[in-house]
Structure formats: C-alpha cells, structure tokens
Length: 489
Image (cartoon, rainbow, N blue to C red; front, side, top):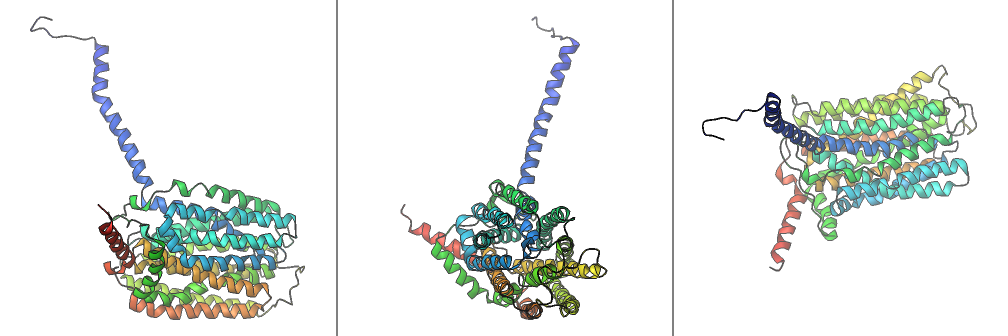
C-alpha cells in the first residue's frame, strides 16, 4: 500500500471490528465477575450454615417430627421409649469424645458419618408397622443412631458457632434453628395430611416411607460443603484451621478444656434438662391424651413455634444496643419466667389424668373436642420455650470462645450431658414411672439448670472474647511447632 494512503473497510466490517474490540472484554469481565460472585456465595458463612440446616432439616428434623407424634406414631409407646433410651445412651457416651473425633477426622467426614444411621432408624419404624414383632430392631436402630447423631450434632454446633462473628452468633443460631425445625414442620404437616382421616392412635406406612426417603437425600450433602479454613467471616477474619493432632492430644484436650474453663461445668445442669423435657411433652402429654390426628397437629404447631422462638431470641441476643452481658441476663430472665409460666399451666392438666386412667385403646381427645384449642396452645408455648432454651445454650457456649476446636469439645459436652438426661427419662417412661413424677422432675431440672447457669453468666460471659480463651488452638499450635522442630531436616 502506498505511503500516505489509508485502508478503508466496508461499514459492515467496521461494525464487526467495533463489536469485537468493545464488547468482548466486558463479556469476559462479566463472566469472571459472575464466577467470582458464585464462588463468594458458596464460601459465604451463611451459605455453609444454611447447608448445615438442610442436613438437619432432612435428618434430625424428620426425627423430631416422628418423635413429636408420641410413641413414634405407634399405639404402644413402650418400644419407642426403649429405642429413645438406647439412642440417648449411646449419644451420651459418644458425644463426650465426639469433639475429638471432629478435630481428628475433619468436619465433612464427621458430618457424613453423622447422617448414615437416620435412614436405618426410619426404616425400623416402617418394619414394625408391617411386622409388629420387630421391636428389637427398632431398639437396635435407636442405639446405632446414637453414634451417628453424636457426630452430626457436634460437627453442626462447632461449625455454626465458628462461622459467625461475635456480633452474629445469635442470628446464625436462629438461621440454623429455623431451617432445622422447618424439617420437623414439613414432616409434621406430611404426617397430619396423611393421617387426617384416621381417628385411631397410630400412623400409616406412608408417613415412615416419606421420612425414610428424605433422610436418604441428606447423605449427599456433606461432601458438597466447603472446608472451614476456606471460609472468611463477615468481619474479614478467617476461621481457625481445624488441626488433626494425635488422639492422645485430643483426649488430653478434654481435660485441658475443663481445667482452663471450669465454668462450663455450671452449664451441665442446663444441658441435662435440655432433652429431658421432651419425654413428658411428647409421650406423657401428646401421646397420652390425644388421638393420632390431634397428635399430628400438636406436633406441627410445636415445631412451627420453634422457628419463631429461635428467631426472636436469636435477634435479641445480637442486639448491638445492649452489651453482651446484658443480653445474656435478658435471655436467662426470659427462660426463667417461661419455665414457671408454662409448667404451672401444664400442672393443672397433668393432675387430671394418670397412666391407669387412660388405657391404650381409649377414645382420646380429637381436634374437634371442645377443650382441644387450650391444650394445643400449651404445646405452642412449649415449642417456643424449647427453641429459646436451646438457642441460649448454644449462644452461651459461643460467648465463651471462638476456637472451632474448643467449640467442638463444648458441643460434645453439651450433647453428652443432654443425651444422658434424655436416656434416663425415656427409660423411666418405658418402665411406667407415673406421669406426675416425670412432669415434676422435668420442671425441677429446668429450674435447677437455670439457677446453676446464673453464676456462670455473671462470672464468665464477657463483652468480648479474649485471645486467652482460645486454649485448644494455642495448645495444638504449640504441639505442631514442637513436632516440626523435632522433625529431621
């Protein structure tokens, strides 16, 4: 081309060049931004807590829907009570060391192991509905589930509290508790719909099949979750990496936790009562005096109330206008007042019936009975109180430390002591202890748990968590450094 001349292109070619030069880079940029936004969403702490909630929606949520029917939906509640006694016994034994298992195996493996036994448990109830002589299978399935549930709940509690900043712990607990209890709400709704036309005292096979299928779906979720060390909290801090020390160090960590933070012992009575009250509510009240569709409706509103209760107390526990200590005392006062108000109401119902006054084939209270509404409101208030109790217990542990390793040990203690209480009272119910005895012991343990928790709140809950509270992280870091120094070069 001669110098001084310029190359000219047709208008349509110029349009193509213009489109390439102007539009292509922004398209690639938009794709990268889209991928980055998806990546950030996946690794967001709330997303991971939601996934934890979904797992518990499909497993413990369905378990609660089944248990809330009273007697596992059966006419004779004895087999279910023995199964729950076996379940809570093994959960209590395993939970004490479940924090160590979590720290050794890591969260995803522990979560996977934690979901495995739920389908077996639901399948055992389907089996006894088809073959009434399969009671031993139901009890054995309960014992096996105890191992799984200990691992599941320890993983869940540690991760849920570790992903939240100090200002978010109440809200994170509320998010999890709402999703988890939505599982029981859905399960109860399914049960109510399937058994609406039934006026006898047991559920049909379809209810157990539905629970079984939903629990199978949960088995696939833990593998899709992110590793904690890749999570950035809302304040920009990273979650402490969960180390995999030796089993010897893990067992020693249990002792270190109690020795360096003995105030956790004052929460043990509160932990003990936190599953104890279910036996009276579900077996000795809901199952004892209501027919199956009334039981299903009571179950539905009970777990629905839990969602509102956990959100209300969770938001209150994160109010920035109040100091953390003030919020702790507010939660304690709410639980103390609620414990006495609800149990005084329940006492006036409990004194009107005994085990002997209601035979298994009795015509029980139905949803159309004149006094059903008042009795149903008691279940709603118990649901509110339960969710506030559990949320506050988690929040208090979260106020003591931000270290996932130490939180795993705390949660292990919580589930162990909690399950010990559950095992004892379910067995007492199975052998026929009078309803009034179980009710009064429930009330007394709840009140006593709050009395013991008060000095712990007064002396241990601070407005901010200090670095010296991260005992296990420091201990393990020192051990890792010593191991590295001894390693050959």
